[in-house]
Structures are given as C-alpha cells and as structure tokens.
Length: 345
Image (cartoon, rainbow, N blue to C red):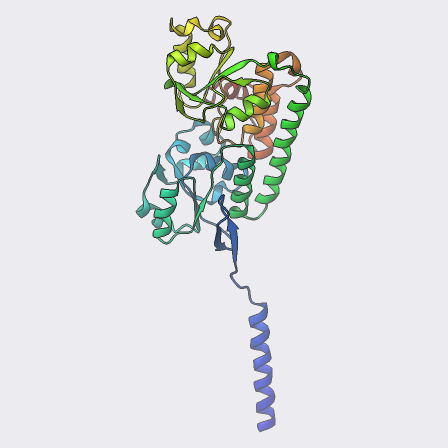
C-alpha cells in the first residue's frame, strides 16, 4: 500500500511540475525610450495612451490604432485622421497641449503611455503608469521613434517600421541621386512658416524642416535658426526668399494673407507666385510626421519641377495610404491632401 502511495506521490509531483513548466507565463520585456532608458512592459501590450499628437499617426501607420485608449485633442480634430480611422472619435482625449488628465488616464487602465513631454512623463510615472518618451528633430530621430513605438506595440509593428524606413531612405536617396549635380546657385532660398496663424514664426535650418529643404535642393533662408522661431517682417524682407511654404494649422488662410498683404508683395516669392501650402494628411507632412516619406518627394518636385516631372505625387500619396493605412484614397482626396485641404465626402 505504501509503495503504491509513493508511486502516486511521485506521479502527482511530476504532473504538477510538467504543468507548471508548460503553463503560459506572463513575461515582461524591456523597451528603450528615445533617451536610452529601459522600460519594462508586458509581453503583450493591449492598451496604449499616446499623449503626443504626432506619435498617434505613427501608431496608426504601424497598425496599432485599435490599441489606443487615450489620445490628444489635435488628433480627434484632424479630419484626415478621422477619415482614415473613424474609431478615433471614440477614444478619450487625455491631453491638450502640455496638459494631461491623470485621473481620466488612470481610468483607462493603460499598459503604457507614450509622450514627448518630460513633465507629462513625470506625472504619468508618479501615477504608477509605465511611460515611454518619444521625440525627434531630424530624420534619424524619426526612424528611431518609429522603431521605439513599434517595439511598444509589438506583433508585426517592427516589420512595418522596417518597411517604412526602407521606403523613407529610398525616397531620400532617389532625390539625392537626381540632384547630385545641382550647383549651389541653383538652390532656391526657402522660408518655411510654421503655421498660417502666425506668419512670422518660422522653421529654420536647424530642424527637420531644414533637413528636408536641403535634401530637396533648397537653402533655408534662416539656416542658423531652429524650429518655431519668431522673426520680424524686416528679417523676412531682408532675406527676400525665392519660395515661401506655409505649414500646419491654417496654412491656406496664411497663404491668402501673404498674397493679399502689400508688405509681403515686396518679396520676389510673392511676385513670382511661389507661395505654397504644405500638404497635410493624418498629420502635417512638414514636421514630426511619418508622411515625411512623401514630403521629401513633394518638396523636391516643388523646388525643381523639371528634374522630377515623372514623379506623380497624387499616385504616390494614394499608394502610401493604401500600403500603410489600408485606405483607398481617391484621386480627388489625394489632391486635397497635397493642397492642404479637407476630405471630400
């Protein structure tokens, strides 16, 4: 009897041990943020709060939008984001500018929160939520931020990130090859106005805007300035740019203001009709945008049209939206994006 009891005990022990070894265990993993800090996250992240408006677009591009349980106000107000991903209207808005509603954030029980603001990061971490810092000022930083976001999302997102980076690098190289024999005097001077609401706030050469202006064969008229810098009208008259590009919010109204203002009419860019609205899609193309892959092509064609006659930006935009958003963008709506307009229903 004792012998049978011992055999039973050994069998039970082996069964329990085997069950323990093969049972699914919730594992943690470490993701590094933009500063190289390691953050321990669950093996599977299912609930994401993204407090940085621009990074919501990256989550969308990487196929993780269904995991969003918190977003930022500019995203739900972006007609193209809503058009491509209507469910964003049902995602709680937890951030407006630098302000974040911690109580509402906690109510969403997120696995992780993404943000570009260190004060927000501090608040989130103090509330006991895992926070991942993401931010960039150039193309290398864009690629790194995309990879970090992909690692947070998990699944197939890292593969999508690699495919996007390949496309971005390919577009940059394509433009560089076309412009390799460009002489310095053939580079037009460019002013990039940050948004149409304030036409004397510019993005200088020390920014991602400056990077794509240079890549596209231009010269930033304020090459020693960073982004979102206030200048005077006298400064703008002094540099007298060949080209003016107005980006982000109220860009169409900004261009209208420039074209109708007698002071701005003194500039050669206005006199020659070279004042443009920067394209805007699920996020403005000109800054902090995954659609920078299209921006490089658009800017090169804008500044050097004869060298890029074969580049069809409507077709390029349609292909991008289908590939990364699985969205069938009509020709008319691709044209709307390219001129900074809203969707045509």
